[in-house]
Length: 156
Ligand SMILES: CC(C)(COP(=O)(O)OP(=O)(O)OC[C@H]1O[C@@H](n2cnc3c(N)ncnc32)[C@H](O)[C@@H]1OP(=O)(O)O)[C@@H](O)C(=O)NCCC(=O)NCCS
Image (tube, rainbow, N blue to C red; front, side):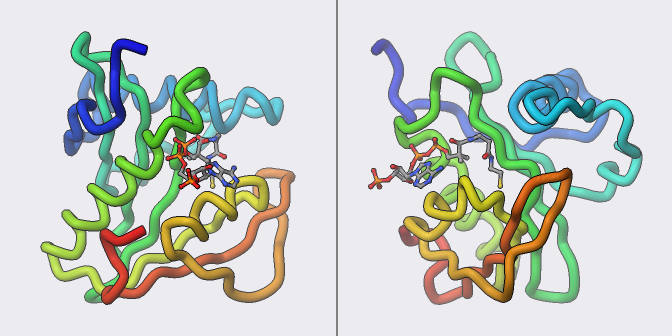
């Protein structure tokens, strides 16, 4: 393996840029096509107000991405976390999320929430997120709401 998750380049991405278009492709491949859905049938204009982040390899290829939505003061919601096929289980998701948590904490965020696919809830638990409430269905598959508080942000 000629790469390490720690060596990937973490970047904030501008809505509408070429890097943003790469995130759409990755999210479509990982999060929508396997469900028989298309990201491009959704209203992506609302993402103009959201914060986009990615991890890139040395060839500027996007390996993982996630979106943060700032809500009430101090609160943010994470969405659309995706790691490129073939790169899962090697610390990429952890690197992306912990780096983002540190950035958001520095911007005053004290509480993060997300809707986790049940299949991925164990990943978020490893990073200190806790399940809240009963599972529900979103994009046709079971999800659960999860949260992480400030004192544990940027800590697994
Ligand atoms: C879920 C996902 C984001 C995790 O990223 P990743 O790079 O594969 O995870 P990491 O390698 O950083 O794993 C960190 C830890 O979580 C564990 N983990 C990873 N995926 C897991 C899962 N689906 N369930 C339970 N534990 C998981 C790893 O074993 C590792 O544990 P360790 O600390 O004991 O070694 C990624 O696999 C992915 O994009 N999956 C498909 C799309 C998806 O489900 N996105 C989330 C939507 S809510």
